[in-house]
Image 1 (cartoon, one colour):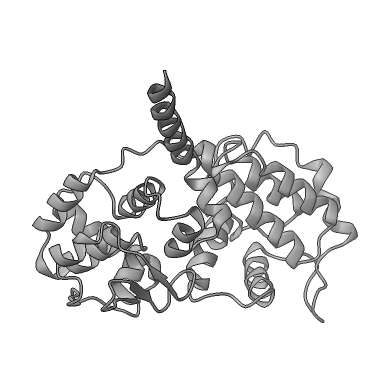
Image 2 (cartoon, rainbow, N blue to C red; image 1 turned 180 degrees about the horizontal axis):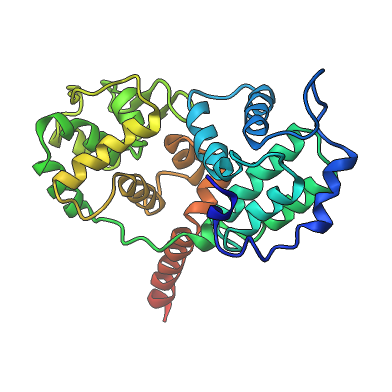
Length: 304
């Protein structure tokens, strides 16, 4: 992909102050390697460096593709790559957006992987600041229980079980398709997935009986595909059924039901969903706030 194709505004970026940074502390070249390094080789080196930093989960390849490979794709045809290209890559994304933060993270990782200056790493990270999942998330018109039941009832038998599991337990679509088993107690056991093994709570528990979730039924699909692609299959099934919401909305709807259930603490809900309490609070903060306001209003109305 040509550099000019990455987005509007790149041509106006003043590269000169940054192009000199990489000349003082560049990537340690292998014997016989020519001066300068191509974007393609940089991305390959970055992938190797990133993979060595810590032990990653089963969704490592999906994470690399989404968070690094995709935002770094405009660098593939650059030769030689210079620090200004990384800065322009980030500048091409709109400020305070998720795409800007992702480009910033990927570009800073490149700079670290090939030992470019710390000043450049800091600058790239600074450019990505300003995005917040809680502030930037588009308000969702989450499906009510009646709408969820109506959709799952009209799905094909092969898709009813995984969709119902995603709705009842708030798990990710690929987890319902690959790693989920409902235990005799009604708890869902997830053996693997994006965040590893865990257990999840049924909410509402009545859906276990409604769709016979103790009896596992799955559609035929290629299990060797990426988690992202497998999860996308549920979206295709929803579109065929003319659903008015996405599979991931089932997960968000579960979280909001948990917020309104006094028996489920935020910590337990986060564990059930397979993410940290910090992420849980960040993503669902406005629903927490709304629930607290509703509860407080009931108390105030009762004493007035």
